[in-house]
Length: 350
Ligand SMILES: [Zn+2]
Image (cartoon, rainbow, N blue to C red; front, side, top):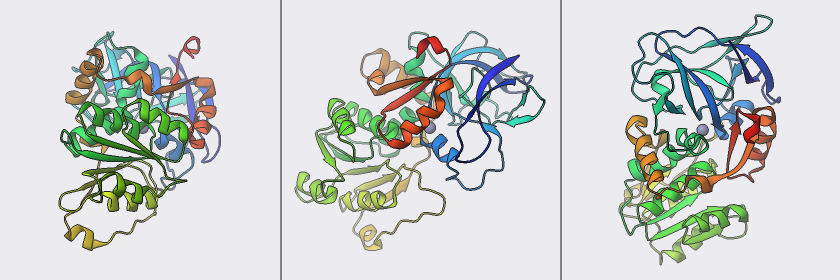
């Protein structure tokens, strides 16, 4: 069996679109016909080598998506052929199968992890798939593998945001906007959205932000203190992935229990600096690993919220690209103008 796939050969070079042969399923593996893949800064960081040297080149990419199970390897009990699934890099129940290895037509190896989604047919570890209702569209389900669980998980699991509280969200990429959706859902009273692009601030307003700040033109810290009448926010969520923004987010959290959550990824080796006296004054700072998401518990919950009309997933999707145009999608993401972009494996869908 063959599949079209995007392959990274060299850092900072465009991905190659190639035909690969799909390996036979091993224990704990699931073959999925991918419908849509998400695309996020993790892939951009991989392509740019921001995670440090890459010993796995050449390899496939993509860590969130949706699709239909085609076949299951020995021992798989969680899903069966025909199931609609969300594909997620966040580990859930089921076997943790070894990484798979695809082959090019000339027999050369292409590495892959426990999950890859920039491809039509993907071999994925059982613990990275979650069966979902057939009522949710593949397009919207594809968002449930990375940004939505991370952003919503930060608000619902990591911060456990209280009703009528105040929250500042720094960086309105997929995670920031998902956190915003969750803050609105949890009925925060003050939701301050901060970014440097006016289009994104506008989108944030339409998704429920009560205040927006353009960090390029305004002093975000001063503005946050003004909005909160000098106290700072109950929750400051950093999803921009910049050292300065992380430092600002920490300062924006109020004394006596304000919580700063760092969700953005810094480039390998970057550092931040904070004043420990702020910790003594009762500010707290934590990191998050995918919003402490338990995929098998949380993803079906988000599907239910979506089906009940309470989670407007579709409003996050701003662009859809065919797999052949994945490099254009990466470039647009780097320029920072897209909300959430999807890669469609069916060129008729894009
Ligand atoms: Zn991601």
